[in-house]
Image (cartoon, rainbow, N blue to C red; front, top):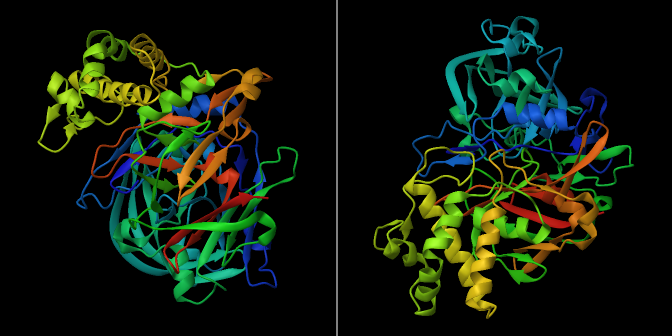
Length: 498
């Protein structure tokens, strides 16, 4: 994501594989792109894990790194579709990604990257509408980078022709994800604020050229595994057959990503504490799982019986400092000051600082940072149990159990497919309403050697203030709730999917 990037193990169940030139706008003025399903295999998931360096977001505060935009591990997201570039159109398979804003495809001038030889390349000499730009650019991702130069040409999306669109011809692609991926490039649907080179997103060009009936686009993901259609991406409005009831809208709180303010995450109606006073959230079609603070994800994993790595540091903190933390909280010590007073975290006078800790998973040699993070999580867990009036022994036992439920270094946590009926409902508090996800919705199934394996749809990452704490609501959430991206009114809408 814009000043920081997320390389998640993406385990989406769907794929866009539309032959866009054959799509037509319906009589209601909407441009529809059909989404087709593709089952996920364990082999493709393993390939995705090999393609990423870390399982954590790397967001940087400030605007100095405006050319760093997010790329989740698109290898398994597989929300892709075919667009046409130039006249006559040269077809490219692209990711439709609400977490970035640029359009890029491989260039015919890409000579030294293996990825470019495995995908079609844009040839400006074959287009009568090509206009040179030439400005060099580079986009850095967590597992590599692309570099190239800007050009301008017409883009065919469905039967709409977006004229003179500024895009990137990639001449170098250094990520393994680009070699293994089933996509050629990326079509960003984020705000222009995070666009490299100030290139307008395609939706903004559509708006300026008055190609749409309304200044919105919407995603509907069909969760029926037996259905032929995987869903639909609609430009210019929404299809009432895709959702039930009315949409709940929240304003975009920070432009760049589709970011808004959300509240708590509830497990069977009970608060998890960490986001009770609010957290930021981003809706990202390029992420298939749900990613959030480790302190919450560990509680979710505990509640659903997910198995992750046993964190020695976490259990050490609970063993050595658990009673002290408990006593300090009972004595009304401010929770955010507990770990600094113990000596596990620095303290700047207003908040506990984790020395720039990024995540408790996927990193090595984090030393005291990890102890600090473990302490901060223990404070959240113990404070939460105190509200439930649990005994000291039960509270410390619970915290110790949560240490064992921390996600594995690879990010995913497995669960028993046979225990899904016993798992709790989980709910996100958004705009004073709760958006419930059932086990059938937040457990992701993948195929391994002819057998079905179930993994938790939650992954952990930690972003310190002021940018965090932060949630990424990916396709697991968007599958349950039809999502409207309203760039005319700068808001996001959610309604139960039909």
